[in-house]
Length: 452
Ligand SMILES: O=P(O)(O)O[C@H]1[C@H](O)[C@@H](OP(=O)(O)O)[C@H](OP(=O)(O)O)[C@@H](OP(=O)(O)O)[C@H]1O
Ligand SMILES: Nc1ncnc2c1ncn2[C@@H]1O[C@H](COP(=O)(O)OP(=O)(O)O)[C@@H](O)[C@H]1O
Image: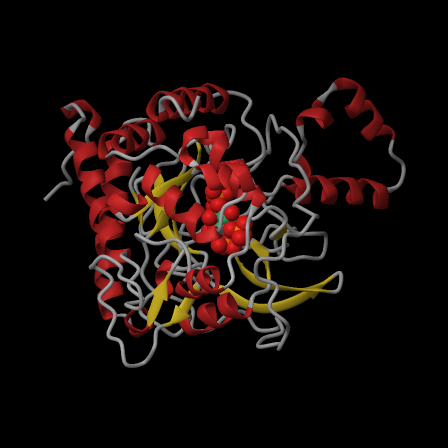
């Protein structure tokens, strides 16, 4: 299907997601995490992910950032890089929720500021005992709960339920790379490269655009990077992952492949699944391709090579994750996808555009950006049913310091040895795509002009 008509497939997929997202939405309706004894459990003020603006007019935007990551998390631990390791233990599958009672979420007012950015934040519910999953809401289940004699058992069950009802959704990337964590944070498998980047970014002008970093933790004998969960506190978030740049592989991966080609059978399989005619006769006979060959092919069948970004995955209001965008290549296809993704809400499209514009200014000021080639990094677009919208920079697992003698521009095509990533080319086209999407809307779909 994907090989035949990317747009049709993508629209069909997103429409299905829309249909599923509209009712009985699965997990991402999040109330709060935490255990008895945890301040959040007691209904005290908790911090939510930063949002640049409340396009739905539900609350004021705040500027400012907390000075440093939370104390108490072990920082700067020297550990071997795990980047690229494919873990087997993914986050636990989230059950469907019918309702996660949560008074105080939608009207959360800004009394605390997320460590990660300009933001709104949310109060946790005061009524923690109103939390039931769909299963727990069934009559038999209620009866069973009433019969529960031990408070300990009761609290254990509710705690288990809260933990499972985390907002966590993974749109792209390696399976098993993430673990949910308490307190509105997530754990990502440790890599020296990403850890070094996040540490540096906490002191850079880009800090408001990346998830707040909370150091390195060890869990079950493995090292993880702890960072803010960008979905925390959102009401049935819709999420899109766009991978940035005109190039998605490292120059060293190319050099390695030229010196000592490593045939990748898995990549050959992924290639011929999309387009059996894409492989050469030699590749067919070996049933393998090299990594740069696969990555370059992916760049050209999608919008990466031409527009400097591509859509990796989308979910709408907690519906199924759609990853069928390998052949979404033209600006028209991407405009259509954004219109479906935002349900044609002009206010959301405008908020995204404005966030990208301020991100661009920060990138141009950033010492980090000037000195790093940013490969395989994504922008995570997130909005929710309350009309809140934000865009974040994530995934720095292949973001490396450029050779010191090179002044990176980020807005020119890549040539071998230039270390250019084309990040600003992608940002330019994304901003234009959002503008073009807004031009497709009727006046009734655009937000009312703000009062003078
Ligand atoms: O999306 P598909 O077509 O499946 O291809 C994937 C993505 O490009 C991964 O990038 P990302 O992690 O940014 O999603 C990449 O991981 P790297 O980050 O390691 O380059 C994988 O390389 P391998 O991990 O070598 O398979 C490659 O197989
Ligand atoms: N801080 C975060 N908060 C919420 N979701 C995140 C966060 N970081 C990553 N994700 C989710 O996980 C997916 C993969 O993340 P990424 O960092 O790209 O992983 P990988 O390094 O395995 O490619 C993203 O598409 C997004 O859905």
